[in-house]
Image (tube, rainbow, N blue to C red; front, side):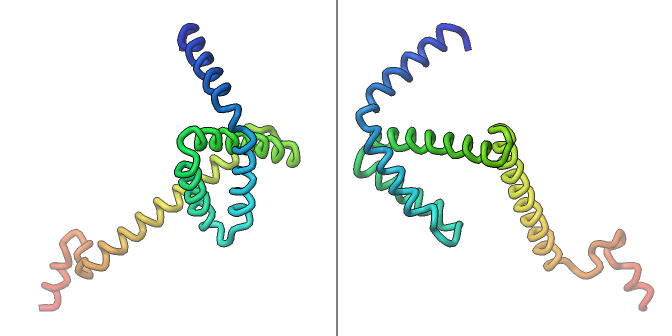
Length: 145
């Protein structure tokens, strides 16, 4: 990115920040409300659905500007939470984020391995018992004759 692009982006950010600033207090209250609802939710798999429903509600009730202010509030809260986790655990912010990223990669790899195993099991279920042998099981059939 060159200097001119950087200046243009900074100017756009400043304009948007000023435009959204009046929505900050409401966005913060909305963030707290969402966290009160979703943070204690069980089972944890329910959380993304609750959050998406909340986001859709914000967009329907407050429009795109309200949604943008809410997203900004959420990202500010997430940043503060990651910094707090780093301080509480004696790690750097980068180390905390690396841990989360590693866990995501491991989960994705486990899902891919499970899908591959399921696919292999499905294809094995439809195969003839000796079809995997180089001669397709024909040699043993001849020996039985």
